[in-house]
Image (cartoon, rainbow over all chains, first blue to last red; front, side):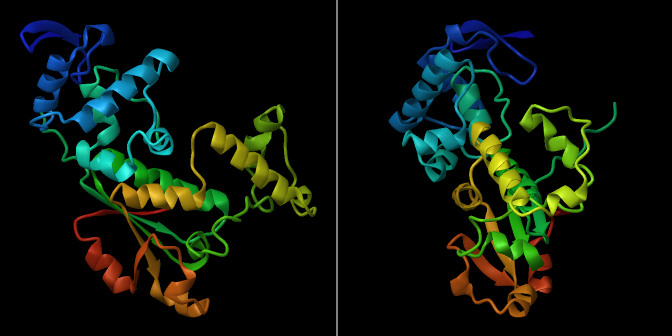
Length: 105
Length: 171
């Protein structure tokens, strides 16, 4: 675990840069992590996905699968890949301040 | 310090067998590759084509004959994993259907999609699905028999061309 300066505050992150405490998360932090992941600006659609993921995480203890977000009409799979290019589940979880997703699907 | 190995950027998977458990590994690995940001394609050939045929893709079966590792499925029946399952039992009518039903239930519980839904998810994720031309000719199939997710019917040569730079994985 290391400490890192993000959006003007210092936060604890794991070896891969995931926040170790999801409760410190806010939209400024999200924007800063997104930038590091190559997403210049978060749109309303990004934020819808992030909010849903955080809500699911708080209710179930894990981030939702891509399939679940597609089925519940949160975000179609195609759009999710376009919003978070190059590894949507992992990237979205990181920007949402959650741990690395553990699922294979 | 030794150099980091080059990350895998592209995978081409080949499916040549058509039981339910022959098809899933490639779907999981291919979709997983897309989730990691790699390029991914799956080439279905011989009996593997059954996963792409509209009339059969929803009724792939678990093979219960000739599989000496069937004991692995015993915990699904709340029985020990060491319990043997003689192949002759697998030949009894209905056993394959039952095993298939059980496996599908288990997969739904683990949030694993059905074969048609999985193909849709994989192509929505940017993965490509190919069918083998030779096998299509052999089984008297045309592209109309195949589901919409198939982007092309390829010869072996075309498959290799499209796989330039990829790790090729035969499942």
